[in-house]
Amino acid sequence: MKVKDAQFIISAVSNAQYPDGNLPEIALAGRSNVGKSSFINTLIGRKSLARTSSKPGKTQTLNFYLINEQFYFVDVPGYGYAKVSKKQRESWGKMIEKYLMERPQLKGVVIIVDLRHPPTEDDRLMYDFLKHYQIPVLIIATKADKIPRGKWNKHVKITMDTLDVEPSDSVVLFSSETGVGKEEAWRKLENWISD
Ligand code: GTP
Ligand code: MG
Image 1 (cartoon, rainbow, N blue to C red):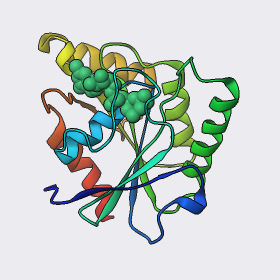
Image 2: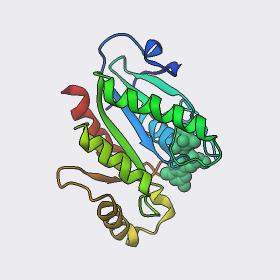
Image 3: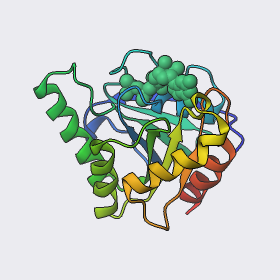
Image 4: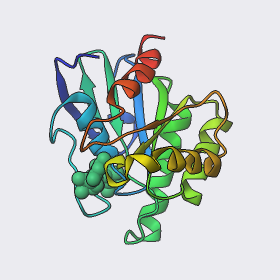
């Protein structure tokens, strides 16, 4: 997709603040600091529209980005960040769960995992949750630039096996540093947007 226009619309914590209208939405999910916000920036070709940080816990609300006035990317707080309080974690969990389960505009969720390491228990729970509610999933294994090419296949296989990925779901190898996987990711997401 050619991105001509990308705008930050709102940082929301509850339904009342989500944008009106019926445009499709694609949400990001994944461990804190894994590269969710960077993924959005890489896809839209803007260095820092979605705020990123080397410290985990940067994204704390549901952030809606309107792309080509056609669909929204929804950046979501990461899971598994130890330094937030239990209460805070529970309230994010509820907000995210409610959004994922009750938002008709949601067309699919991109789970971002770190290609370098096997997916975590939280990643598995997220994948299983989305499958259970029949929400379309795309798995992005990012930070491929940190692994030598010769080991890419092995790591992709570990990712697929650990998540027990269904044959109909794809794992796309990706890097926000080099842009590898960008075209393939767009091809998958375009199917969700045009459905
Ligand atoms: P939270 O909002 O805290 O949940 O984090 P996030 O998942 O949005 O991660 P973010 O995009 O902020 O990236 C976290 C760190 O990883 C930053 O320092 C990024 O520069 C780095 N990073 C993200 N993607 C890549 C990648 O593909 N390769 C490399 N080498 N670094 C990356
Ligand atoms: Mg983020």
